[in-house]
Image (cartoon, rainbow, N blue to C red):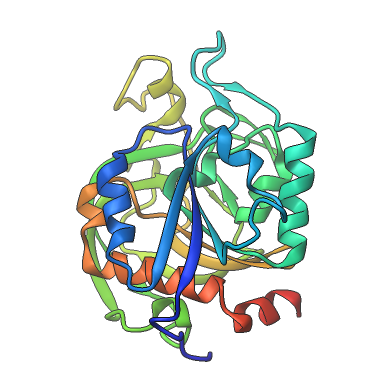
Length: 273
């Protein structure tokens, strides 16, 4: 895998909101990345930019948003379909080959748009429902889990300069990972079993940190991967819940590597192959 060219200036659009986050600590992380200028635009305004015209001048797109959910709906959460013009624009952007880095809760976005999960390589479900032709339970979450992240493929540019394993304390998910679509980069030593997680559906309906009556099969331990999203290179990194992770030097290196790789000619060539 060709080495990342560090220091080259990049302009990156960062999409956020739809899920609570601490804006200042989050953006402070990007301020430490040398040569990478990040512009934050929140949902829903950022949808106007996620197309070939709106992304002109940007080298990559970072997703830290969670659109398409209405937590005030009678059935919590309600699922909101994306506007057709937005869908067409985003797909045109991916057909153009624009690199994408998706972080943490972005994997829960646009639940009423099945193809979106295919683009990212998985889905966090806030309520039970059909996915890939089968009924699935709602996903699980657990905050402040101390676990060890291990590099699966040390030759990939996204993990360049990282140790073989490193500790993180962060929120982890028991969710759907489409292992048939992804190229694994990072694994976790956490136990991805039902007893170690809480039900997302119970949480959004007023019962935080509960899992009684909730059943979920054992899940994948993969917490980072890359894949082809139409003709674009995409990296998904499951860590990224809050300042403890934002401030971690290994996580910051991972973010810089992911952005630089996604924006590189080598990644574009790989995605188009």
